[in-house]
Amino acid sequence: MKLRAILGYTAAALTLLAALLTPFLLYGLFSKGVAALPLNVDEVYSGGPKVRTIPMGAYSIDVHQPVYPHLLQSEKPFVQLDWQPVSALPPHVSDVVDINGDGQPDIRVSFDVPSDPKAPLRVNVDSLNPRYQAMQNAGKERFSRLIVRVDHEKGKAGEDVIVVRVPLTKP
Amino acid sequence: MATEARTLPLARPAPRGILWSLFLTLPIFIWSLLMMGFHPGAKFDLVSIIAAILTTLFMTALFFMMMRTHSTYRWRRIFFVSLGVLFPIGFIHDLVVARGTMGIPIEEMIAGRTPFCFMPIPMLILPAAFTRTLIFPGSFASATHGIAVMVGLWLALTLVMGKGWCSYACFFGGIEEGVAAIPPRARIRKLDPRLRFVPWAVLLAMVLLSLALFEPAYCMWLCPFKAVTEYVAARNLLGMVQNVIFILLFAGLVIVLPFLTKKRTQCSWFCPFGAFQSIFNKISIFEMKIDQSRCHPCLLCQNACPNLSLSKESIARGETLLSCMKCGACVDACPRQAIVWHIKGTQIAWKPERARLMFIYGAWALAIMFGGTIIANGLATILHFVV
Image (tube, helix red, strand yellow):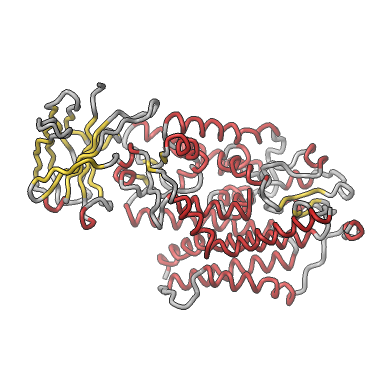
């Protein structure tokens, strides 16, 4: 009984010590430990890894790997394309994009680039390859079918990116 | 040891002397100054200085009263309700300044800037374990709002407090605890004890649904606190339905039912994170115990418990249920000092004040670090409008 009491008080004292160390050591240690785990944010949100960049003169288009949502996930498969930097884009973009890199055009993407970064965007996608679905006047209804302006770290020198996600047809 | 336990007075102890209480409070005062950023090199504007000073005095004064009166619950409740009120004020203000709305636009999710609270943690575990994927539209390793930062903080605090998280760290529970404190007595007194199993059912359902749908199901569909923090921007009918559910759950579980029952009904009957956190009571060294030689089951403790963590059966066994949040309400309510703070392995009712002090120093230190900074932020937000 005495040993159990000694162990109990020792554990209580260590818990108190842990509390005092939390802001200076433990919190950072645990956060770094968790951050070191081999985990990634779901590709439906992140858009998947970039596979290649298509230079378009003053700007470029990043092509991401196609994203296939999990079995019961409510989204459809899609591929993400990033136009960047937004500052180098003309007022109206109309580009033919070879997504799969086979030398053949897959889609034609057209959208206006408003000067107001908060203005809503609309995109038209003409399908030149049946693998990719056409979109007419699409906004940001779903993660798998959208056009949005994103000001995240992916942009070169912190510049904005216009993200277009094109849904894939079922293979 | 046994002799000392028997000689513990039946009546509530007299207040501590002011000087002795001040002495016991001094470490907390110094800690508060440190946590509020009063150290060499810190930079403040006037409003932040005022908010930090007020928070330091507030947290120190509450701890002083805990020391002087030997009572934990009522002073902790003042902190907790303040946290519950000031968190949404600071958080909503910050959201509106940053994005102009409380709704999360889809581009913010794609950019990984959805703030991560602790609620989805249990829902992330299985998808992460099976697919190495985090089913949350946030950033994993961002230094300011990343998922890893919140998980690290939660781990550290849970190590110290166990389920005490729900009484000293959760920035949502204070709202319903405040509402529950308003009426002088409960309008609904007969509560089905089986309701306490519902959070486990919600936890199981949400964990499995999150794995199946690959989205944090509770955050997407059932979190009542979306109503006072941030919600899914209502882009379509689905978004509208989600927001209506959030508002109805908030009104029912956080406002109406706590007012009628004087219980934390969202925590007791619904919260999956609370159920998940209960598991960590098994590894926490601190617990509540009932000295059965002193207990004449009057059930005052059961009535006082805001979380349905005491039943007749558990009282007969001399312990609280797994869901005990260590808020201290039962200890304060017991007229015979039968229910006490306890360190596992030690004899029940042997120097319970020592066990209380060891828990409360750790819990309050972390409450200042986490909740205190949130309170200071909320105060600064209000002061920005006033000063």
